[in-house]
Amino acid sequence: MIDLKYIEKNFDEAAAKLKKKGVDTQTLERLKTLFGKLKEANAALETAQAEQNSMSKLFGQYKREGKDVGELKAKVDANKERIVQLQEKAREAEAALYEVALAIPNFPDDSVPEGEDEEDNVELRKVLEPKTFDFEPLEHWALAEKNGWIDFERGVKLAKSRFSVLRGDAARLERALINFFLDTNREKGFEELCVPFMNNAQMLQGTGQLPKFEDDLFKIEGEDLYLIPTAEVPLTNMYNNEILPESELPALMTGYTPCFRKEAGSAGRDTRGMIRQHQFDKVEMVAIAHPDKSDEVFEMMVQNASDILTALGLPHRVVELCTGDLGFSAARTIDLEVWLPGQNKYREISSISNTRDFQARRAKIRFKDGKKNRLVHTLNGSALAVGRTLIAIMENYQKEDGSIEIPEVLKPYM
Image (cartoon, rainbow, N blue to C red):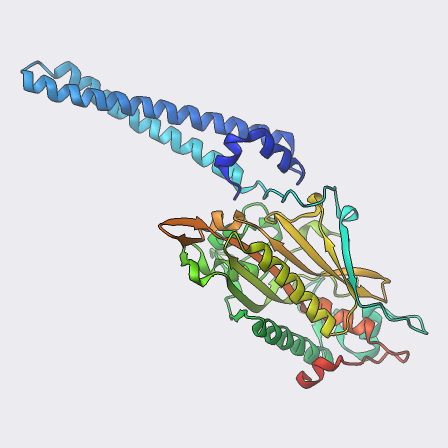
């Protein structure tokens, strides 16, 4: 969650930053009004409490002097009732402010390029040159049909649109990729975890999916549980409401999970093939870092994801997201986009973000800095989205007859 104390003291500066992430003037004005109401409610409560302290002292003095305390007692009792009412009013004002604040995105870092959407993102570098084909490369869905790798029709029959079934070598390749990603991450110092694929609302609020993105989540009827949209949720919340020793930072974690998303905001996009599914596999990296070291950890995570793509022989580019394309919780994000020759374009395959203390404040994740407790920085990123990697291998390793080679690093897993 955003730092409310910072916003209250530096409202105009904070508002300017939030506008870069698309927060409208009406929301900002509402926030300002709620700050005023809370300040007013707290001031009234403090005044009443000060009056109560004064009268309590006077009450003792009257008793010692033998004076009649009847009238004073009536005033004390009336003020007690008033304090209860003012406490409730202050609580309501704070709750109203907190409710709005939960839907306010993180501040972008000052270094993030300004822009409105993905068209304004900045390419930092390209890694590996795309292969030149002496035939017209096919897209993954055509290759899937030739090889019998992906059954789209039966995926729809079993569930609904945007579900698919991997068959034969495709299913084996999916499993091989998961193991390769986990092994690589573990070698880089990430602890491997196997986590629940359902989390409760408190965990999803901690990482920023709730309340703003509830429509994108699959809710379990009758339970305080949701299917996770990413392993970022359980991995980050491993330390929800905990205080870590500074010596344990950074805590590096990785895990495989299926991810479940309604993709409510992407109607009509990527409806063909397996680019945008309601269920997909992903291997995630999460770091709980010291605030002074999070930039260093961020660069390590970006490089790790890039190294995995390089090991697979997949051309890709590294892109810095602009302010308008940053995710809700992110202060800074770098995307890795893999080259898909069938589509003749780069497509996102990993998104690595530093959320600074935004998620830590929501999830109350802290570390012991001497005698003081401080908020950690949390980072997350894909290493990698498994289905999109499978697609990239299909398109980049296709032969003229439609058959598909397997990258050398995956052959031991196959």
